[in-house]
Length: 159
Image 1 (tube, rainbow, N blue to C red):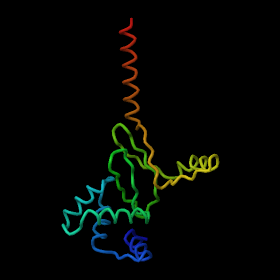
Image 2: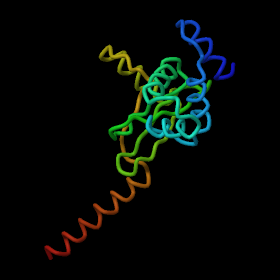
Image 3: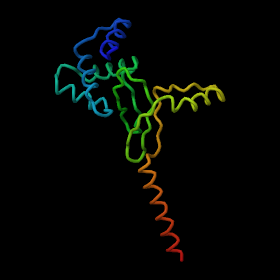
Image 4: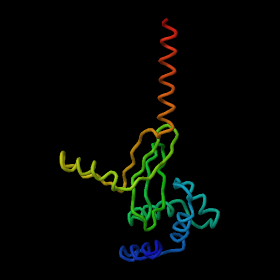
């Protein structure tokens, strides 16, 4: 089923209309090449029409998330990032705390850990909204190199 059709059906179930404003936001989400902030999405909307206000963009993004068509990424910065999922399977996000790189991984990779949490402490993880901070391979390598250089410098200085 197409993303638009799914959105339309979910809106009808909730008693909402598929307005031109919601259609514009969804269309912009389709064309984003990478996750974007609500401000960036609003900026794209403003390039098309000035009649859509910021609150409409936020409300539409909330609906798209609720219906599983958009994923929200906590990048560790002040603003969340929004990623269009369409009819794809929701996935987790790994966010590099150093460079900000975001990598999506499928839920299946994380399910053993989520199941472990459920079985051992009774905690059920909301996997579709999971963002895991850490260091990407490149930043890990840089961090390791800096640590080695510091260690060598320290040893050389102490000799």
